[in-house]
Length: 403
Image 1 (tube, rainbow, N blue to C red):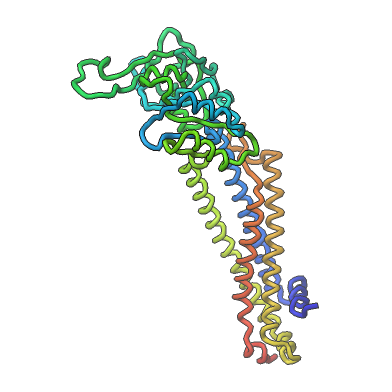
Image 2 (cartoon, rainbow, N blue to C red):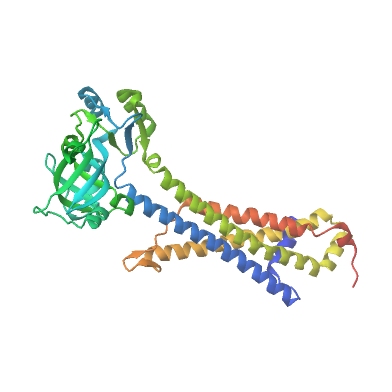
């Protein structure tokens, strides 16, 4: 057996005759355990928040979305529609028309975005699951479905046939404007549903049949703003991208769900990184106790070190004793901390110990990457701390001993 490892384990598990050193060692071990447990729990919490946030955006975000490279729209021919339908890996696709509009009701105006959708939209996105009041719209009608924020700001509900909701969009062109009819295209509609996804989408979108959006914007029947695709499970996204691009050409840009929510992903990843760095700093502070504990152990074992040195043990091997001791303390403390953190995360998932609202438990998620990240972090920092502490052993220190 390696002598340095054997002695290091003895020093780690045995009690010192000095109670102060025992107390410092216990504090150091507790600091490592609590630090690693805290880091694991926080990472699980942010992973849960990320999944919770993206769960809502994924309800209305397709697997792939084709948008025009320039301008606001592009032409989709009948031939291209058939070719897209024949691509086996595409489960379904929907034609979309989007534009900024003014929504007016009862002398109040609100700036929003209309999203004209065809009959396939429900097959591409799970929009039905977020309709809180009323129903989804019917094609070839003047029915609309609005977000909760728009409904609240304009004070209208669902199926109010006595008062229509007016949708305005500025007319293109130049020249003097003498009336509202000359300045805007107008369509009156009836709100039949209210959706609730998140604050941003609730305050932004008005869903309408694609025919209504075409009338409002003076679009032709083959003119669209975007195409949204739902892919079959276990499909190679890159392969489908290439096939769609071969049909639509270079006039469109394909974006996946991550690319559609670049800002959101960046924000969530930045927050996760910031929290990781903060709690890593806490771990670094906790590992100062490990350094102190090892240095105190070195001073307490000076007579034993002198004996080992006189028996022919090199200074390098003596340093290795305390390096291994500190590393073992950090690694085993980290594993215990991860285990405690895992228990608490599972309890939160099963028993909902912490609630955000009376009906919504704080979301947590177990990711394999978090296990690896916490273990590697505590191990690397523990090795660095052990290296610093063990360097206190010098030839002069080991060879000079007086009772």
